[in-house]
Length: 358
Ligand SMILES: [Fe+2]
Image 1 (tube, rainbow, N blue to C red):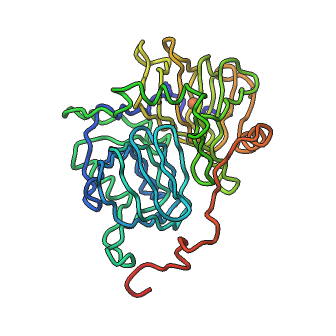
Image 2 (image 1 turned 180 degrees about the horizontal axis):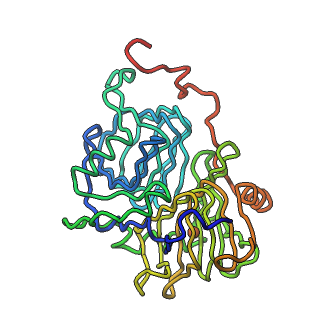
């Protein structure tokens, strides 16, 4: 691996870290009752990431996800009453909504917070269920970020090397997971009542799934939630109680700390806890990372490409882990991966077009 990209760059691995607890909630004009904390928005791909909060009782408009969207429920409870997503989802449940899905009939039973990645814009439909009222794109996220004096994570290694703008100094509004142990307890409890057991083609209840031991590492387990053979993107839940060796992210990756704290070489001694989100752009390298304190360190991990491990800068490649490794591990352990597409039902836009002239 060449390190000549920029010899002066001394990465710590936290160039793309953002403590979402320090940020305010921003209203989504397109969907009253829905708020967000922006994390990343790309003018190149149109992808964006945010933490979303929907208030109990909010009536959400029928929504069309023009790109695929994934979400990890952090707190609260949502009931999807219609279509392929029909289910009640709460903390510890992760789902993938395939591109071009129409989603309607969501009941917000409790104020809910979730982290979501959007691989394309979201369209909110009018009451006729056909016309488009408004669209939320990466550019709206960028505009709201600028208006509110916030900073997004860098999208690329080149952006990482630029000086970071001043952090937000307004009133912080912490996530529910930073103020309550509830999610941590849920994630650490593999014993849930039989009647609560949850199996669904498009949602994964991460609670009852056993941790898969990561080859060659002690006290490091993963739950594999989705593997895309098309884009190589894989989603994992990680239990990281030991030291992970130095590595390059050959593809980008993002992480949200859900429980415990993670330590980086240049980070504060108490590490980074629940609600801290990291984006490591393609090509990022960092030295060993480890848990800080005694609590189980658990985080979500979306990996958009392979990770290449070594034993220190300039040492030979020790291992490369890619979607193929995750697929193999998932198959060997009967992991319940979510489906990457819906069955050919009427929620698909081809059968149910949108727009006034459709
Ligand atoms: Fe990493």
